[in-house]
Amino acid sequence: MTARPLRRRLASAGLGLALLAGTALTLGTPAQAIIVFDPSNYSQNVLTAARTLQQINNQIRSLQNEAQSLINQAQSLANQGRNLTSLATSPLSQLQQDIQRTRALFAQAQGLTTQIASLDQQFRQQYPSGYGAGTSAGRTVADARTQWSNSLEALRTTLSMQAQVNDAITADQGTLASVSASSQGAVGILQATQATNQLLALMAKQTMQDQQLRLAEGRSTALEQARMLQADEQGRANRQRFQGSGVAYTPATVQAFRQ
Image: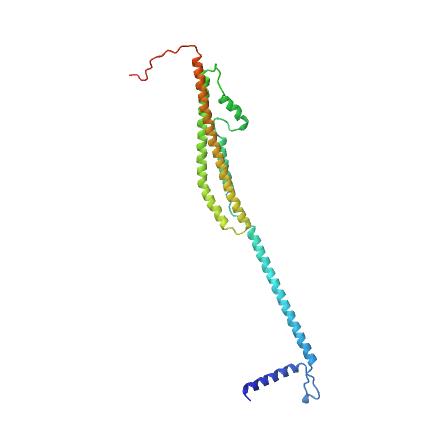
């Protein structure tokens, strides 16, 4: 018999003796003890050990589930914190100031009023629809002077607003770069939403400034057209006054330069 099978038999015998030790019954005197194997007691011990191991495994899985639940809650709270984090800066106040400055330039326009309540009355006074036969030359000259001044002030307002918008465009480039960087670096829903709103506010501000500039340009063009129409009417009134005076026209030599 080889050494390996012998060792296997000895190991099996030792294992059997160890299992029997727990369920052995002692018979006779201590010097002549006989170990007796109880199958039912052995099976019950094995079942008890298996159930205990199963309970331990169940408790381990329960603890693992609770730990994972705590980890998920912590991640959810962290995400909520990021979603509620707002941007550190906002360009909205600067955008509003730009709009107010542009509006102030238009409101301070000289000449013909920009207020709808009194515009119609003032326009009828300064730009009459016609001149009667008895209208003096002084009246037509005064009206022409007022109309020329209105056109000049409207043009000056338009140029001032153009300069204001040009300065705002330079500032808007920096604002756009800042808002774009905030949008790309947003850490939560709130920051992303705020960055989007700031971009929309910048677009709205530029649109409003463009509308105000168009209003100023349109006002300047309209007043100049009104002045030209009035110039035609004033010329007609002057010709009518000259022709209806009853004085014959006598040609005369005119010396443009003196020696």
